[in-house]
Length: 413
Image (cartoon, rainbow, N blue to C red; front, side, top):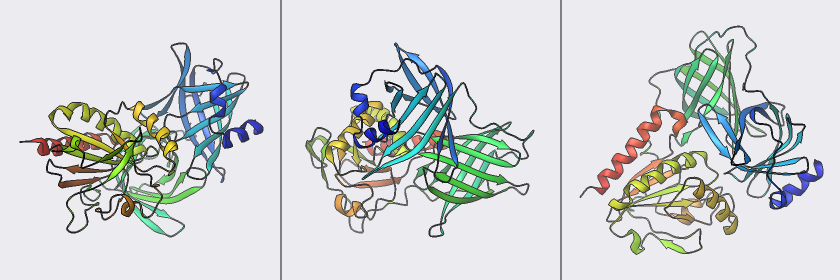
């Protein structure tokens, strides 16, 4: 396994070029663990099914089912390529009930690696050890995350739903949400986790009788960690999503030229966009909230393009390599059936000067996604930061209504 692992890290995708679909992966539920460097384990679940003579996997997080259909094997080794995020699970299949190996996520200049194990026929994410729960976290919470490296704080809103000991929910922030979290109340202890192929999260905390949550730890990926606390507050709220990103004083229009996935240069001044309402989606294939927004925007484009709507995705990828970015974005485009153009800025998402280099009329790109609404005359009318996806329930429905109202108003005669 060690030799196979080394080959895959430095020759990304080499096994999948030669491999054949695996037929030994057992159908049914699996419980998986990703082990961090500090020993904490981020748990998630997936189901294996047969489809058209081959195996497919559905990664489960609360009500979400993320389809994974690129599964290859060579000998005892299995390569499961996730549909987004330049990410793979690589493991040895022992018998038909144990997978052991690594989760590898490709970053800008290196690979992020975590130990991975999965056991067949284990459907539960967490098994409570207490005989009963001591709290019900259902409702809305004002949350504070603290970064121990610099003691900086970020405020968010937690929304949870509890049935018996089972808990689902998410955290809403100014730039989006933590998507579908799932876990348990075990006595007075709360545990929630999520894995979507690009991000691995674990939240733990104590829920107190005074309607507070203390001692919270937030683990992300192999090493990142933050602290969190919360207090129950049904009125907890975040800043207006239309107030966070602004044009520079005196600026009312955007001007850009970037290459699309076919290498052709596309500009906002092209005839295609003249006298059209244009929605710019600042995004990246690495971004889960962008994934949720794209699923919605793709359907929106099909619905409104006949009335004069154009949507353009403007991608900031991890790498400045054009071919690598094309490959990542093509997978993203195909999964959501995107018919509108996606352009590649050629500037890394981690570049501190990304705004100045690409859209200098903006004060700053605060978060991903950012959605810019432009009227038929080319004037920027509204800028929306973040996106509340389907994991946020009613907030997702409200978000969609806001987008639709905004576009309807711009399309009106």
